[in-house]
Image (cartoon, rainbow, N blue to C red; front, side):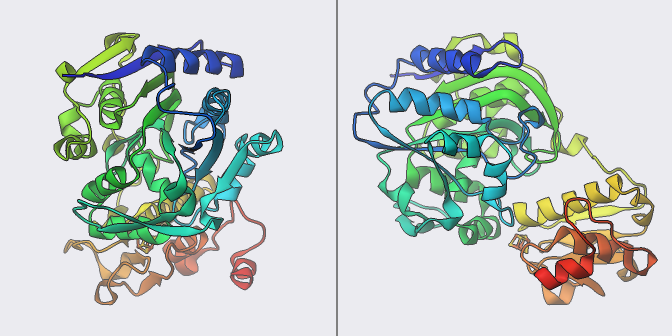
Length: 403
Ligand code: SF4
């Protein structure tokens, strides 16, 4: 049996581009190179994580531009055309992430960096899909000869970890990102993996995130690059590094059960630095809470997608930064379609987003898909004060005029 090879390479702390390039070269070489995958003239689509701000490398949220550039250079040197393409989370303007993250500078240097949200869409069939028989993606994805997943190593508030498989949601239209949450995330993402068939994963594990990832987690510097052709194996190894048993990570398990790779160590060949030397137990999402306030409840119902999670968490972080947490006790914020426990009083209920069924909505409901985070803050505060704008100019009324 051919084993799935996964390489782990450690960089120097806070590596510059040369250090990153050296680690990327070594990680690719340790898995036997990619000479058989990439041929001159091919279109190779690199899919880094540009999920949402913060964009600073040391925040560990998005794939560092240096990692993407290093992989792009390796592939360009082989005579292929490299397209760097991604669509950020629902409600996030990909261009804003490109702007502040080093990807704009890549564009200026002549790399093709594409905001997929503005690109032509295409339906891609999922021959043995469990949730979808086809998915709405993009023509660039359909036409690519090779797709490379370039994730960030992070914990995730719904999926335990996010790595090379979960990251592929950035190849979906926003409509299908939302549908995936409504119809079944853990099989839907595997449908996507089976449809787009990435041939390589290279993980940016330099600055990672633990706790409430994929956006609001705490940064951890690990200085790692992990690579492999079997995305299930790559994610299993990254899970092990973060302290997760692979069979307990549903996406890894579902991917293996559908024959798309392996998470079993006896079926893998690990090369480079041993896992035990770099393993560090990451804080779990449920152990983290950036806004701990007695008497405040937050209920994310089952269908809640990244759009509403991001909106609500950023609203709470805004309130913390604006010294407005005193308005939280007695309030319950609800998204998606959850069971609302009997202890939640209708007085303090704030429902958020169009996924909350009409009959479950509170007296205070914030419309939108996803709603604006400033309106969530104002809904929580009510008449007691005005929401302070943390990341936008002017007051709420001026926002309203613009929207
Ligand atoms: S309302 Fe919120 S949870 Fe529902 S699809 Fe829109 S952004 Fe996602």
